[in-house]
Every structure is written in C-alpha cells, then in structure tokens.
Length: 330
Image (cartoon, rainbow, N blue to C red; front, side, top):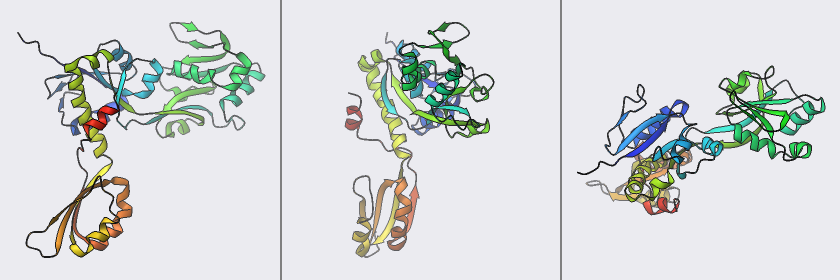
C-alpha cells in the first residue's frame, strides 16, 4: 500500500494572514474555508495547511511539527529558532522601535532614558512582546554596559522572573503596548508599520532597531528528505514568481521600425524585448517586454513619443531562473 506523502505547511494568523492568502492565490493555490478554519483545504493534495500565530511558527518548524511555513523574520530572531530560510516574501514589513512619551524632549535615545531615570534612582520599565530581542538590545547599549556590565535586566512575565538587575525591567506585554506609558512604563519596545498608532498614543520613536518582513522557512530535517525538499522547491519557486511579478510590468506596444532603435536606447527590460513584424502593416513592429514597475513613469514620455497601441498590465507570476534560486539555498 502506498503511503500518501504531504507537506505540512503553517501559515500565519493575524496581520500577515490576508497578504499570505493573496500570495498563495496568485501562486495558483486555492485555499478553502481559510477564514473559518485553522485547517483550511488546499487544491494541491500534497499540501496540508494549518493556521498558527506567527509568534509560534518558528519554534513549531524547528521542532518538526511542520515542514514549511510563512512567518515574520522578527519572530525567528526572537525565538532563535533553527530553521532554513528560503525566501524573503517582501510583505508584512515592520520596524522594531523603542518609543517614549513625546513630551519628554530631553530623551531621544536609550542612553538618555537610562541616564535620566537611573540618576534619579528610578526604575526603567519597558513593555514588549519581544523579550529576548529587547534584552539583547539593552545589553548592547554602551550606557547600560558602563553602569551594569553583564548584569542582565529583570524580565517579568506572569509565570516567571529572570535576571538580576531590578533597576531595568523588561515586562511582557499582552497587547495594546502603546497604551502603557507613562503610567505603567517608561518605554515600549514594539513593532510598527507606519508609526501612526505610536503617534496617536502620544509617543515618539527614539530608536529604530531593525526591519522585518514575512519569510518562507523550512524544517532542517524536512529539507534533507528528498521528496519533501523537491516539493518545497516547487512551492518556493511559485511564491518567488509572485514576489518578482509584483515588481514588474508587462508591456505590449506597436512602433514604426524607424523608431525601434530610439526606443531600445531607453527601454529597460528583464533581458531583451521580443520584437516581431506586424502582419499586413508595412514598416511596423510589435514589442513585447517586461520592465521594472518603478521605471514606468520615467519611461512614459518616450513611449508616448514613439509607440502606439500601448498595453500595460501586471503579470501574475514571473518564475525566476531555478538555478539562481537554488544558489541562495546552498
């Protein structure tokens, strides 16, 4: 009896879910009951999907609960999970920041914050969901090192407290982190997309730590399994095709042959455009090409001058060279 093999694919719930579903749809996957079920169906019978919180996914992948997943790179760093990163999916972009009340004009860095409150013999309390990342950030600060050396800040959760330094406390936040200062915290260490919510809560960003996007990751043992690795490669190739297509435009146009050279001097293309004579129209050709989306505005005047019948659309997928993609996984 043949055992049916499947790839266990975890996708994120919450802020990344809508964009992830859109990515999978453009890649050709049809996900059924995705909004109501944590185990939606996929039109590929070799893929078994489960929806999990992005915070949980890196550790679940490292512990072999799933073969493949999409999550935020911030949570891979936070959990220090041992996984294989395959693709930057280039959505869900957030920045980890340190923020304090905006009325504190004299505090514009972590060092300012530490010096002001510690000099007044007061505690510095920082609320965050990113306990490990926040600890690493604080302990890499020169002012903290001068005052406390390798003494670790106190980390406080409802279940356990660790760390020896009661003067600087990192406190686990369960949401609404922006609402904590100034009564419950001196600062927050949080993620933001635009900074709008931080500003709305009368806070200001005093440091940007790093950026994060959604990434495709695989379990290390799954990658060693030949069947799973080949299936994962197929999935990754389709997703990469969508990522690349989002940055490109597909252009069709008609042009007099005498103007082709003038246009090609200005025309950026993925490689070289396809040029074919128009049947039954003497002295005219059709050009078919792919260009970078961000080059279209500067290209428009030259198109308007020399071309006719211009058709522009966004491609659904542009599959990259598989050899180039594989090189990034070695």
